[in-house]
Image (cartoon, rainbow, N blue to C red; front, top):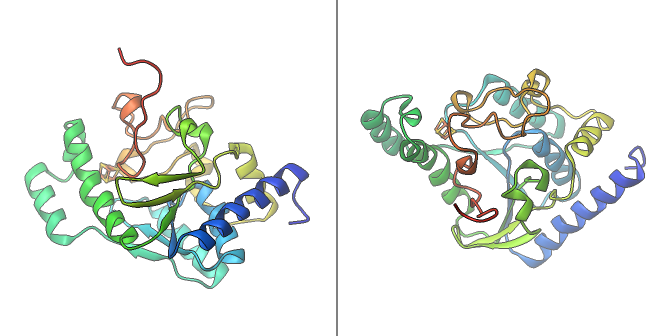
Length: 237
Ligand code: SF4
């Protein structure tokens, strides 16, 4: 870590401390890797220094090819394997049969239905029986995420949720990636600050909100996939 600036070394030490405390305090900790820029930082820290944490990701079946390339490059660099979870075939066939292959665009309810089948159900299986899951969310990503705590009880899934990157800025994430020459998703160089399923993620203009390229046809307060709660921000109107 000697090649990092003082601020970044402190951020990194703080993140490592959160990860190690989670391993000590909670049994069977996993990291839900979303394969964006923050994920590359956490993958580096976990596979290099806290290998007790299992890393998994969810292959929704609608990811960008660049995201699959990143999985390969990460596995080759660290000589480790990321566990992939998939939607249940019968659930997916049923949902697509009823709603259509791109039915998630027709209503918020249908979009949540697609995320439910392709992301939430596999996620629930992935974290079942574990003591805590790690996520790479940062306060700067959205008004809702700004209210998160480093360790929270995740009542939706029945385990603790650990967010060790909350205080990192986007610039710090990229400084770490560049200093360490880490592989990253090629879409970041094409204007994608946040990367999810291909039909539901697009590039954003400089200065736009980081998550404005996700489900851009919806109101901004609904743009989560069901893995992170949408907190009430300000007063309801
Ligand atoms: S992000 Fe889009 S394609 Fe992916 S699971 Fe959600 S609605 Fe479906």
